[in-house]
Structure formats: C-alpha cells, structure tokens
Length: 296
Image (cartoon, rainbow, N blue to C red; front, side, top):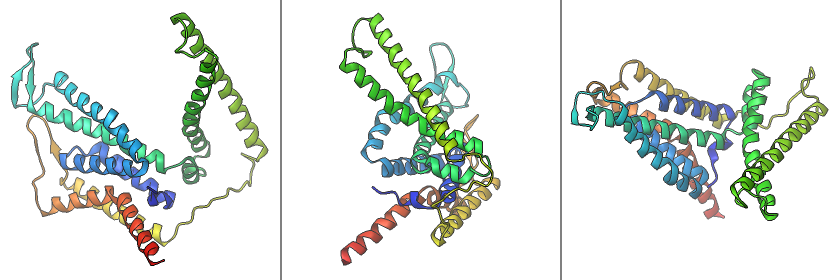
C-alpha cells in the first residue's frame, strides 16, 4: 500500500517520529503501551505489507515472550508473592507485569524505528540537518545508506562464490573458514573502493566549497501546516497531562497509577490520535482516490 504520510514535509515526519518514540520509551502506563504497540504494528504492516507481518510474528512475538519471561527470573520486587522459586527467591505478580510492560516497550520502539527507517530517508535527514550539522548529517546519511548496500553486495558475492564452490556452505570446517575470510576480504576491498569513489564524486561536485547551493524538492504547504499543528496540539496536550500526573503509573511495590476519569480518557484519545495519524492519513487518501476513480 502506498504511504501518503511519507509524502509530507520532512519536518512533519521527523516531529511525528520524535514524539511517538519518546513517548513510547518513557510512558510505562499499560494503556499507553498498548496503544503505541498496536499503532506501531498496524503502521509497520501498512508500510511493508506481508513482509512486516511475517517479521513481527517470527521475531518480534518470540522476543516479546522471552523478554517478558526473563524479567521475573532476575527481578524479585513486588508485594504480591505468587510462589517461591527453587533458589528461594519470590515470584511476584508485579515483576511479571513489569516484564510484560518492559518487553512491550522494547518491541514497540523497534517497530517505530522500522517505520522511521522506511519514511525518513537519507535525503530527508540531510535536508533537515544539512545546514545545522552538515558533517554529522552527511555521515549518518551515508552510514544508513551503506548498511543495506553492504547487505545486498554480500549476497551477490556469496552467490558468486557459491557458484564456483567457495561459499561458507562448501567443504570442510577449515575450508569454510577460508571461504568466509575470502568473502570478508572481498567485501572490505569493495567498501574501501566505494568510499574512494564516493569521495572523488563529492569532490568533483564541489562539496565543501563556499557558496555552494543545495537543491531541494520539499515545499511546506497548507497540508503540512495543518498536520504540524495537529501533531503539536496532541504532543503538547499529552505532555501537559504527563506533567499533571495523568499518565502516572508505578509497578513496585504495588501497582497503582492515575485514577480513571474523563480527563484521562481524553489523554488516551489524544495519544491514540497521535500514534494513528499516518494510518488515518493513508485511509483518508485511499478513500479520496477511490471516490475520484469511481467518478471517471
């Protein structure tokens, strides 16, 4: 499915992911964790389709379960003792719930970062920070671009070596090690040659010269302005609620948090609206396109 949110101005994209990532890392309230996880899961599938669904079920779900189970084995805080472990340490309800919450937070942040990498391309990052931190933004952009290129190139080299019987799956253990070292040597040579070519290309295009201009295809229009206002409103309202204790929650020694009220429900809705913004935009644009197509 085409992601309409990716076509918004980079400022809008960056502020959105900054808000959802920070909130996902620092808000440990169960309701907010659940909202963030569900929205991140839906948006990742919206961006990457069946590939993301398969990845979430094969890797994220087992990681969630393992992380949730490990915490009670090492964390024995809490006042509600369920039983005692063979080593004599107590197994508490609070440690189990906290393990689930911590695992949910970890998985949610990973999912949001996967969405960030799909939306915030290197050219957007350079556009935002090229004038503020030009060297750092260029290095980060090149690093983010280098990783997928390196993975693609190592597959090409491995397949080529496999065709001549020199892959890491061919021969004895010693031969496999030699083949692996050979592939690594080829990749290091490729990376060094690529860096030299990149440096020569940048130099020939005048990188670093005074007065050099930069071309940009991004324009901040009315649509971006409205989206930015909405994100700032939701983010500000949620931060205000956090400062007033509306998002408070503790796990130890007893679980307790902010009382449920009309105000807390409005905070839940604001957070849901914030996290669900890209999916809502995609649904709206799809309906608009379907209506236009039906009239033709």
